Picture 1 (cartoon, rainbow, N blue to C red):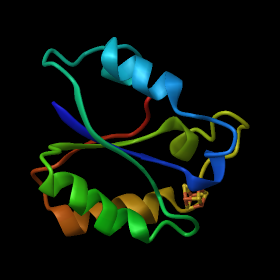
Picture 2 (tube, protein in one colour; picture 1 turned 90 degrees about the vertical axis):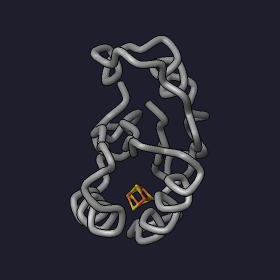
Picture 3 (spheres, rainbow, N blue to C red; picture 1 turned 120 degrees about the vertical axis):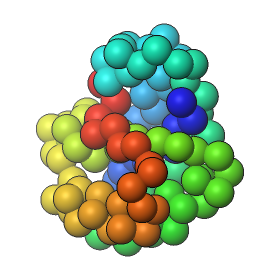
Picture 4 (cartoon, helix red, strand yellow; picture 1 turned 90 degrees about the horizontal axis):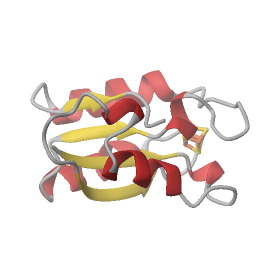
Length: 110
Ligand code: SF4
């Protein structure tokens, strides 16, 4: 599995992404059922509210080999402050529309 990870730009000041990288390398949490090796192709932010840049940023990661787009837990669960992204559904729909059905989505990291 080649993962392009998208994180919340608003949480960059409070989280360096260590746990996301750890659960991918150790295949834990959202990655525990993955039998293949997990390779991180890219680790980008949404570009800021309302997250429109995720569409082109995800596409760039796919161009570089990503077959899976993972939304970090800062987006979908609101980690680490319990404040999920209010735009996540729109972002996911727009990314899926742009990238087509061959791309796998993972909804959280840890
Ligand atoms: S759009 Fe969502 S994920 Fe991006 S900065 Fe805003 S709250 Fe965070």
